[in-house]
Image 1 (tube, rainbow, N blue to C red):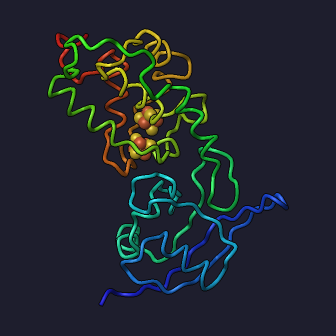
Image 2 (spheres, rainbow, N blue to C red):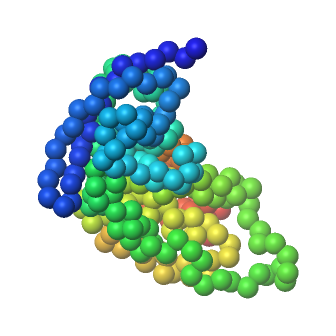
Length: 245
Ligand code: SF4
Ligand code: SF4
C-alpha cells in the first residue's frame, strides 16, 4: 500500500470581489500516488470548497494546471505527492499561480491573456505554399522532422514563460518564439519573411539571455533555449551552416 503523507500546503489566495490576497495554510493527509490536482480536489471536498484552481485533461496534455510549487513552475496534474516529497525533501509546499497573466482567482490565471503573446507569433501557416510534388507529401529532412516533432510537443503550459527572466521585459516569451520557429521548419509555410521580422523584432529572440530556465522546467522535455539560440543565428533546421536555407 502506498505511503501516506501529512502535507502542509501554503496556497496563495486571491478574492477578486474584495481585491484581497492572502496565503492560506492547509494541513491534509494524502497518499503518495495522489497528484497535486487530486490534493487540490481533496482540499475542496474535505477542507475548503472555495479554493479555486484550474485543470482540464489531467494527463499533462492541455497545460492548464501549471502552478509554482516551491518556486518551480510545474504541471500540478503530473506531480505525485511522493515525488514532490522526494524532489523537494519536504512535506511543506508553497503553491502560487504562474505569473504570466493576471490572476482570476486563487491559482487560476487568465490564460486568454497569456495566449495573446502566442497569438502574436502567429502559430499557424500564414500563407501556404503550393505543394511542389503535386498532390504528394511535403518533404522535410529526417533531421528537421526530429526537431519539428520535438518542438510540436509544446502544450503551451507557460511554465517556460513563468521562469523566463525576460518575460517581463517585453519579450513575447519562449513558447511564443517556439511556435513561430515551428512554422519556420514547416515546408507548407510560404511567409518566412514576415516570420523573420517577428522573430527578430524588439519583442523577439534577442530578448532571450540563453539562461536555459525554460529548458529546465519544460514538462515536455523540449530544449527550448537551444531552439532559440540556433534561431538567433538564423538556423531553423538544426543543421550545419551549409544546410541552412
Ligand atoms: S515549451 Fe515546454 S514549458 Fe514552454 S509552454 Fe511549451 S510545453 Fe510548456
Ligand atoms: S533561455 Fe531565453 S527564453 Fe529561456 S528562460 Fe532564459 S531568457 Fe527566457
